[in-house]
Length: 96
Image (cartoon, rainbow, N blue to C red; front, side):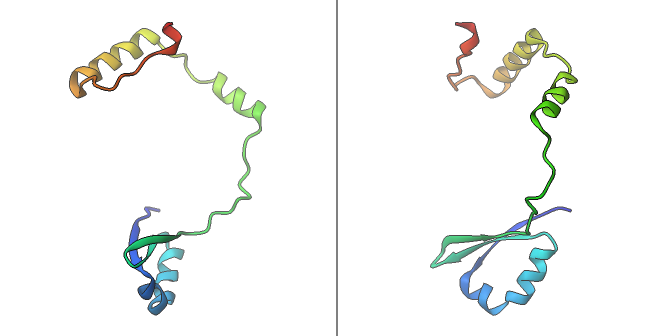
């Protein structure tokens, strides 16, 4: 389900609340403004009862990931710097 966010005024929310609630139920989100300033976000409800993996399960999942080829990573970073520039001063703390 693709979601989209719209900006609406407080008056529109008050006058069209039934239609807006149907749209929220269908997956849309709204930023509500008062005097052109955002004051609230109206979004579909997401249950907090989602089962989350335990630490041991996460560790097992990470162990199954492929290892990082650091030389390839650095080569990719250099290639990206050639395209986008390297004006962001990033320092690798592990190279100290």
